[in-house]
Image (cartoon, rainbow over all chains, first blue to last red; front, side):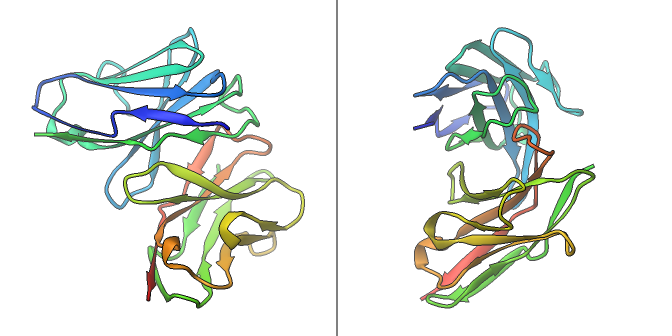
Length: 119
Length: 114
């Protein structure tokens, strides 16, 4: 149980294009989803927290117009990297929880990540 | 504020020998502590968690960790390493009773030699 599917697993695209990454909870309703970014040989940095039906909460330093997050249903959240540039290349990981708030006691379940490469 | 320090960026062991991955934390509250494993180009899998119950926590794949408040440590151990244990390991701290506000350590890469 508690499976989170992230798609695509890898994407390579040209600079200036927009890329959408999907995060789905397959067997539970994810009230809250998190988006992380992981640089090579670095830890995970939380980018934003999204709750179904409301605007995402972005961490300090994360451009909300650059990284668009939509949590339209209880099983799907999307991250769109707009006008991507080589510096946006990274490994992006989502997680999902049944908790209603960021400070819930419910565990986070992680997707397998998306390797984004911008040429 | 919470923080976590993983003392070794890379640990190398031989197959069949013990594993020790070190983690120290800082927290203003009674923390919840976790160890996650990440295989290459994969997401994170929870190995074990401490949430103020027993100080010795047993996880999956033979791993365990001991919460030592006096030393502010939560080291991860395994008696005998297997080749499949080679991966990146993250020590994570969170607020009391909270699993939504996770603070990640920088990770320790475990290599296992045959």
